[in-house]
Amino acid sequence: MKNKIEAPLDRKEIRDVFDIEFLSRRGVNLAVDDEELKKIKEIIQGFKKRDYYVTLGSLLDHDSREYYKKNKFAYLLSLIDEQLSYK
Image (cartoon, rainbow, N blue to C red; front, side, top):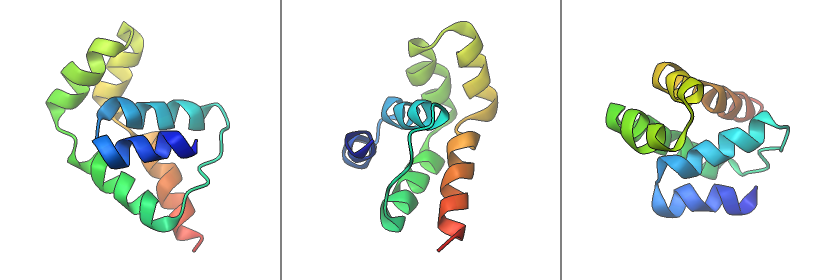
């Protein structure tokens, strides 16, 4: 997960954030410090409609594409908010 966290911090690519959410959904712990979580949250909030529809959408199957068009990274954002609220 450490490498997956570093990728969006360096490149700010939507596919890197998708990888983090994918692993989180499979039980991999977000063992990241608060500052990195805040930066990832900012990156997510900076994605535009085009990022979800075109950039990420071109990588996903139809069902996943529709999910992310509608929900974006709500799941990952909720995990981040939850982890930040414990501090």
